[in-house]
Each structure stands twice: as structure tokens, then as C-alpha cells.
Length: 131
Image (cartoon, rainbow, N blue to C red; front, side, top):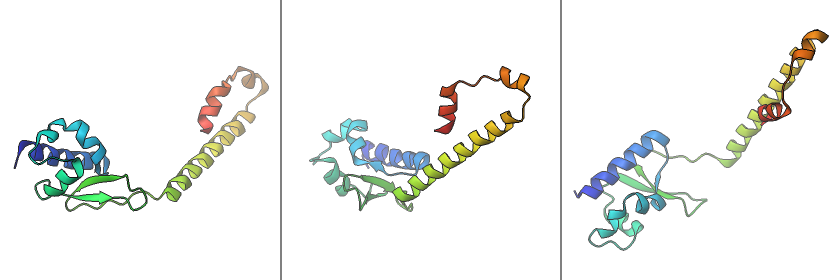
């Protein structure tokens, strides 16, 4: 196995271990510029397809985003997050933040007038907490 194949195979595994996402074809050409010097190189996709066994990986392509093509180590499975699920998580986080702000204001409401005069919370901080 050539040095570039070994390096790429290791990078696919390392990237997967860190992010649990495919190493995208679009990043391979930039990270591994020497790949273009390989014998028979035409483009990244055809080179990867011809050398897939040596890379110990499989090609993943997203059915909803055709431009999202990458390599996943053999033995692993990639399930992209459902965009609906992601937006639900964001909404839930926003609700939690809103609740925290209301709780803070309720606590402040219980302070005496003298103590309340000493509490200064800049508006931009409150807005950041709401995001």
C-alpha cells in the first residue's frame, strides 16, 4: 500500500473517532495535495473508488444532499441528524433558557428594595442568556 493510501486511511479513522462524520471528498484534495501525483489520478472520486479496499472504508453519500460525499471506516455506520430533530433541540434549548431567565427574575423579585437597587444586570447579558 502506498504512503498516501496509508495516511488517508489513518485520517479517515482519526476524523471518524473525533467527529463521527464522514471525511468529505471536498477536504481530501486540500489535505492530501500529493494525491494528485498518484498514478492514474483523474479526480478524487475516481481515485477513491479505485483504491477503496486499501482505504479500509466505504463511500457515504447523503440521499438528500448529493454534494455530501465522504468516507466512513469499514464497520461503522453513519446516520445524519434529522434536520427536524435538530430544530426541535434548538427550540427546547430556547424554552429552557427562557425558563431560566424567568426563574432568575422571580428570585430577584423576592429581594428587598435595598438589595434590588444593588443588582445590576446589563441588558446584553440578559439577551445572551436568552439565546
